Length: 167
Image 1 (cartoon, one colour):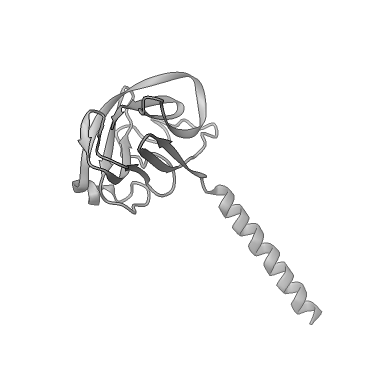
Image 2 (cartoon, rainbow, N blue to C red):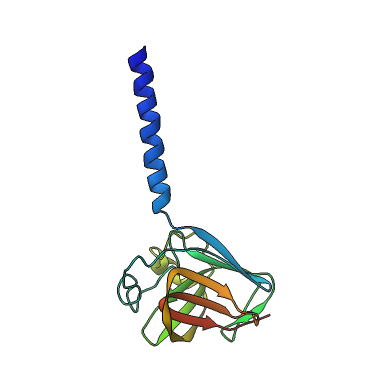
């Protein structure tokens, strides 16, 4: 009986350690809020890696975060990068390049990463191109935020892009 209790205790401790380790490896998730717009995304860390052109290849669709694909919700009709978009929730993808990014809103929700994007690209609602700004300092953790004017800023490593939003 003592051996059985001992083995059960070992199993519980091992299970807890492995589940804690797995949870620690997952990127934290966060929401960013502007006026009548919000974004939900995973926030990976740089951890000394080369991000754009390295980890995230230039010219390849990126989920714009970690884990499940990033989503953006508009509480009312708006313009996103100067193009009209209806109120609703969309998957947010980007295609990073050195000097400009393509920012994509896609109506297919529930995507994991950008792995299935090619099968859902016919559901793109819009694509806009925005210039890249090189930052003087490193942003360690991928961040999406909104300015007081409601523009959406995406930044990570030494890269920043801004998408104008009007409601």
